[in-house]
Length: 202
Image (cartoon, rainbow, N blue to C red; front, side, top):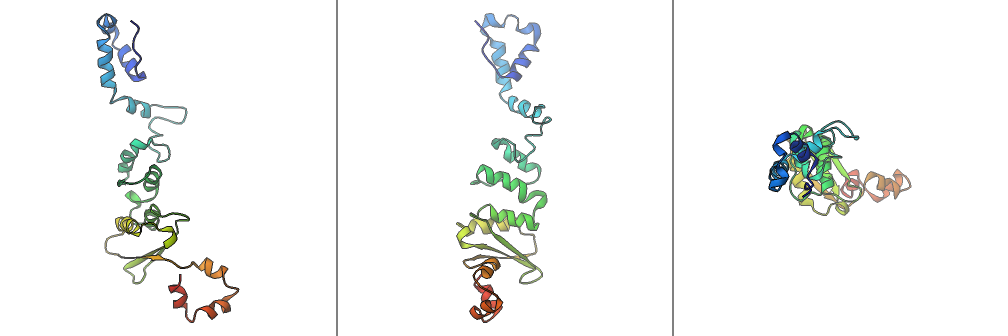
């Protein structure tokens, strides 16, 4: 009876046992199967800790772009990033890249947290020290915000302690759109009596 196929790590382990395995074929490969059972929990570790043509050992699993999907929660915890349920594989990778952990509370992390749940251009407008020095505002567009509750929850996860957050979902325009639909500032002033009205329409 020929030897059953096993994972490479199991084969190396089995071969290293030397004379202990000489009579294994005669008893139905019991020792081989024992090695295979032990290898079930070790093969993945060996696969990702060995050097490959793509880089030195552990390099692939330590990169959020190349890490296998099942290992993303493990990778995230190394930098203090929790991966909540409901995220796609790409959203998990983006969260490890851009949100909490060592970047928690930074403007970039706050913006990246909101963008996890946005669509389209994923526009996020962060206004620091607004409306007071101990607060900040975050605005997104209605057309790019399918679930504002998820965006707000993600923002609250990143909000620095002691600062107040104001989150708005805007249905209006950006400064770019304001520029594009008016000939000049005189044209803008003809549509809006004050800058506050222009802002409220944004």
